[in-house]
Image (cartoon, rainbow, N blue to C red; front, side, top):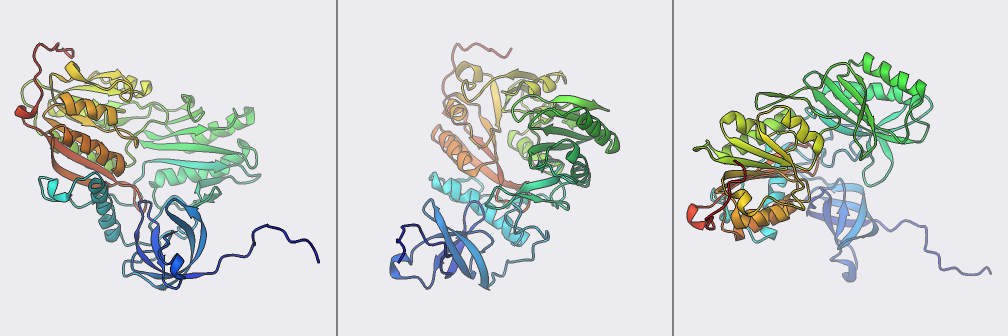
Length: 457
């Protein structure tokens, strides 16, 4: 007889019959076994592709947080909200999470996701002045004008798409339903061209933005292309009539290699020339919706009070606020965005890292309102400063319900009142949801501000 080893068996785990109880924050089904031994009866399985109420067969996988990963084998009893995914690659592609769920159910789930995040911080729906969070405002498919894709070189035709669901492989997405037709066309052109630029097996990323003067394409390549590669990219820019094509690295500024026209965006009635690869709301429809909510939150200007747009980017909110009649001070830590905003000469914009140096104390003295629109990490330090000395009205904008709820809690503890909460779905079929909120507090709740310097002029 041969020696016994302690290597684990390579046989797959036995399938388990389970009931799906809900959806996790990333859109996975949360399942509990129906036929497991008592010791495993309470196990929680994260099951992509499963919906609440379904009875399923799953195959257990590795440990994950407070539960276990699992693969969906079959659906024994489908949920009423299950639909046929419109994209044939939906099961493999990681670009979408929930194409198998009816749109109305997605909207309800995203609203509930925001409500749960607030509840986790002790904020009930009854604490909202309107009595509850508003229904989700959902954007249509095919409207993404800003999209990042991964590219992989091959001898004849490159791949262009998204990471596979739950893995590191690349799924080619020739008929992506998220992007505008102009971006889908550029993705196809990249497949044809990148075989001359990327070595087989090497990867790059492309950030595409559809502007009013054409597509602005930024390629982040692992190394600079040779002469043949540059000629191929120049031909691509010509064939697709790109407004601009830039080369860069993931962290460095982009270098324009073809600029047929200056990319142009209109924000608050002002033309803005964005830098290569700017942060921008993913769709015009989403931008218009968020802007409308921010304007609703701030109301009409009163007197000569000033509004601060914190984490302002290119001025998505700052310029519409200026158009409405507010005096606006805008701040962001991205020099290229601030430079583009300053060229409009409409608002006073400054480079500032609000994570390290939040607007605080006397600097907040003459503000009648503030817009706070941080990245996913939220604005902990800035909200702590606002809770101490902030203005009477704040519009909070967030793409991460968890940090949004944390920052709202800070403001409520500082005496603010939560007037309304409005979830916005800019990312169809994904687990992401944005949210806008209006917070107010009366003059009697504001700290005394005697002998302060009007630093903003």
